[in-house]
Length: 103
Image (cartoon, rainbow, N blue to C red; front, top):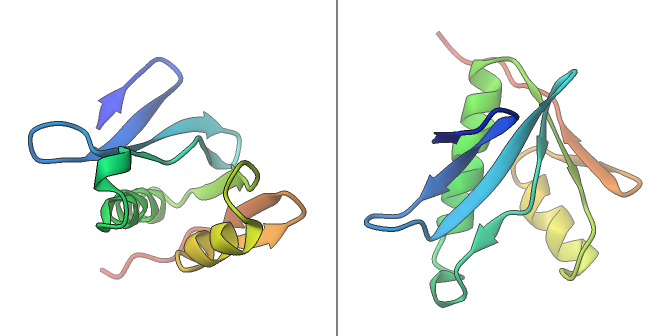
């Protein structure tokens, strides 16, 4: 994790970052930026690894995650990917409430 004054990056990669996302603190949790994976490393599960780290973090700190679901990727692909992590679509916004972390 790399921290900035406004938020932080979560990333995966052995010797260099292959996939990352920026999280910015907002009133009820975190707003997610674009999830980026190097083109040569796509379809290898790196984005899924990053998102699992994000939801684990959010659950640990009882935080809601929010993202804007638009861009170049088809809506059904966005909804399927983020929906697999518990995000629910509301217009162009997708939100994921925190899940209780087992003790």
